[in-house]
Image (cartoon, rainbow, N blue to C red; front, side, top):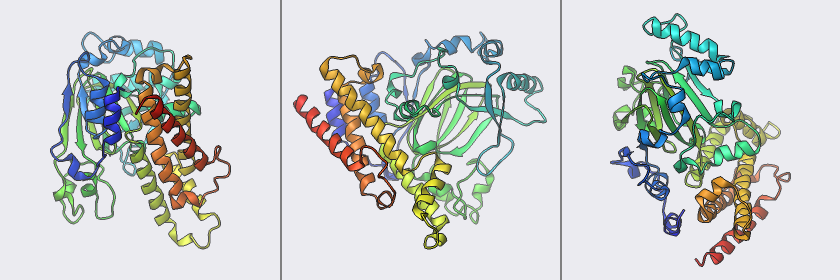
Length: 421
C-alpha cells in the first residue's frame, strides 16, 4: 500500500446503505500489468463493489493446464491420479434441506465415477444432480502447487487466523456438472469471496446489500431460489416487487470474480465446471463481520428470550448457540482481532529493525499493516463497549481487551510518528 492510498483509506467514509449501491455495475479488469493493488483497494474493497478479473490473471496456474483437457473439460484422469482417495463433500442440488442442499462425504474417485455416468447419460442420474462443494483441497494437500492467490486477495485475515489456530480454513474447490447450482445466500461471516473458474462457465445473480430484505417470505425467511415463480405471489413474498434486478455475470473459464461483503448471490454452472474459491475478511470488511455477529446474537436472543430470567448463564448460552450456528462467538472474535493485530505489530517491529518478516505482509507493506492495526483497534473499541460483551466472563482473555486496545493505539501513534504523518 502506498502513502496516497493509506491516507485515502483513513479518510474514506464507508457507507453501506442500499443507496450507495444504486447504479453499481460489475467492472471487468482486463490487464494484470496495468491494474494495481491500490486501484483494487480504492475502487472495489473500500466501496464494496464487485468486479471480474480476466483469464490473463490466472493463466500461469498449474491447475489451468493440468486439471483441464485440451478440449476445455475437467481432466478426470489427472484428478484421479493425484486426489482420487481424497474425501470430498457432495451436495444434492435436487433436494432442498432448509435453505440449502444436504451433503454426504464420499471419495473423489466415487464422485468422478458418478460424474462420468451423469454426463454420459445426458445429465441424468437417479441419485440426482450432485455437486462437489467446499472441498478443503489446499488444507489436505498443501504441497500441491495448483494455484496462487492473486495479490489483490492476499490481505486475508480469515484464513490467516484459522491457519494460526490450526483450525479449518476457508479455501475450497468446487466441481459440478452443467446444471448444478448454489441457492440464494450470502457468504460466511459476511466475508468477501473470490472464485476462479479453472474450466467451465458460471452464471452469477448478484444482489447488493439490503436487497435481500425484499426477498424474504411472509415468515421472514430468505428465498431459496430467486428465479422461482413463487416470488410473484404477493401474499407469500409481500416485498418482492420492491427488489431491484440482480446484476448478472457470465463468468468464463479462467476468469475470477470478486464478490463483496454482504452481497447475496445465486450461482449456476452452465457447463461442467471446476472452480477455486476463498472466503476472506480484511480491514475493509471487519466492521461488517462485527455487524453480522451482532445480528446473529440478536436473533438467538429473540429465540430464547422467554428463558432469560430462569436460565443460569443465559448470556453465555446465547453465545454457545450463536457459535454453533455461525462458527464464532464474541470471545473468539476478540481473539481473532488480537491475532491479526499482534501479527502486524510483530511485522512492524521486525520491519523497522531490518529483520526477516512475513512475505505476505511484506508484499502489502508497512502502511497496510498500519491500516490493519487501525481498523482492528476501531472494531475492538466497539466490541469492548458492547453491552453483551460486557456481560461475558472475559478474565481468561489475555491480554485484557482494554489493555490490548491501549497497546494498539500506542503502536498506531508511534507508526504515524515514524512515517512523519
